[in-house]
Picture 1 (cartoon, protein in one colour):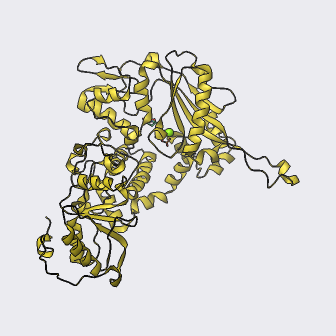
Picture 2: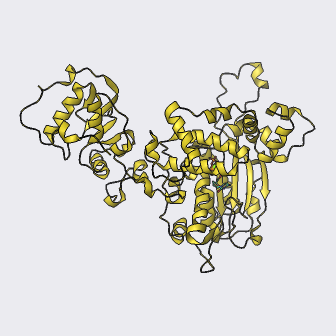
Picture 3: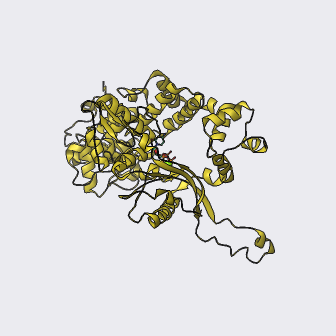
Amino acid sequence: MDKIRTPSLFPQRKKQKRLHPPISLSSCEVKFSELVIFIMERKMGVTRRTFLMELARRKGFRVENELSDSVTHIVAENNSCAEVLEWLRGHKIRDSSRFELLDISWFTACMEAGKPVDSEKKHRLMVSQILQSYPATSDTPESETSSFVAGTVSQYACQRRTTLNNCNKKFTDVFEILVENYEFRENAVSCLAFMRAASVLKFLPFTIVRMDDLEGLPCMGSEIRNVIEEIIEEGESSQANDVLTDERYQSFKLFISVFGVGLKTSEKWYRMGFRTLEEVKADKTLKLSRMQKAGFLYYEDLLSRVSEAEADAVSLIVKDAVRTFLPDALVTITGGFRRGKKIGHDVDFLITSPELGQEEEVLHKGLLLYYDLIESTLEQAKLPSRKVDAFDHFQKCFAILKLHLQRVDTSSCDTSKESDKTEVKDWKAIRVDLVVSPFEQYAYALLGWTGSRQFERDLRRYATHERKMMLDNHALYDKTKKIFLKAKSEEEIFAHLGLDYLEPWERNA
Ligand code: DCT
Ligand code: MG
């Protein structure tokens, strides 16, 4: 219940008589400099707006006459979020994410309190996620803007437009630590619960500031709520802090940071008493796989993550190399970079061609520092796999590519004798995944390899539970009609599933 009685405090129609003498901005001391308010005149009128501005200034708030760059809070009365966004667009402002868009009820609460109050959900002008992150253009139909209703948030990530604009990072970062730890301890139930909850929080167009904000949202069980509550109240999670100092977590985290080391090997090394990578490397009796040897050899480079510029450079090389052998090949970047991420742990590619046959040649000698080729098992594939996390049957190659960096500036050391001996490393090892798909499965492969993982999981779960269909990276099977549904594009697959199309950058669940 909103207990604030707006009319009694601020008459909608102010009488001509001024309640207070006009106060100039300079005569009021700004007490709350952390926020800068702009009050919209639209539907409010000049007189009421002037009155409210003066009142706020007298109470120590900073209120701007114009919508300047410093404005942080926009207050509107009797305007929907869509109307405010439209008005902003009219003022050449396309990115509304730098403002809090608030109803007059928030302003009223501040005036009553005599200080800024946290904006609650009821105060915020909400809009669907797509418009929060990708401000509408003037030709976006009004119908696309809608109020945020928690009860309508789907439990499936494939029905939520999730961009990289995460308002709840402080919660999801903690959840990621807990998820990892549950993974290391093979607690699949809690692992999944926190992954799903993190995905819902990433979707929200606002920051959770109180427990009430969770009302109506899916995937918010008591285990999740307890963690959120502690973060709201204490600013941190004791559970996550415990995990971060846990010996098993720390060791596993180190071990899996080596390319080729998964949970099984980590478990083994931990049981053998190893706690650091130095200890592992020092044990000469240990048999490392080829992949793990490469992982240790290029450890620093692989740990340093891949930038967008590096991914672009790798993309050129891969396209060039692939087209040497398959001139009409289609090479598409997938994974995180296709979803708009600026950084990744690898670069993923999907390769197809109307005439396949020589795909092994993709493994251009001299280009790859390491590769592990996994032959296609397509002939074994029948119905789409029932397993949500199952591997597909495509021929794929987990590789490490030698990326030559721009010429390194050696001018400072070219006269010293020492420098002659110092080899300047002018390349970086980059993890690359190459997946080769038959032409007719390309759309399914692209959808499957674009991710995110949570998006893929929920897409399959949705197909199974809501549509009685089976989906994997190769095909979609309708169990009722007993037919495979063909698709030439991702859009067609979404349509087969009866889902609204989500762009790759809206799949960051
Ligand atoms: N994928 C999947 N299930 C898996 C592994 C991968 O659905 N078990 C899909 C989703 C993403 C894509 O393959 C590429 O995988 P990653 O490279 O691991 O993920 P990413 O989103 O590209 O993230 P990163 O930036 O860390 O590479
Ligand atoms: Mg990737």
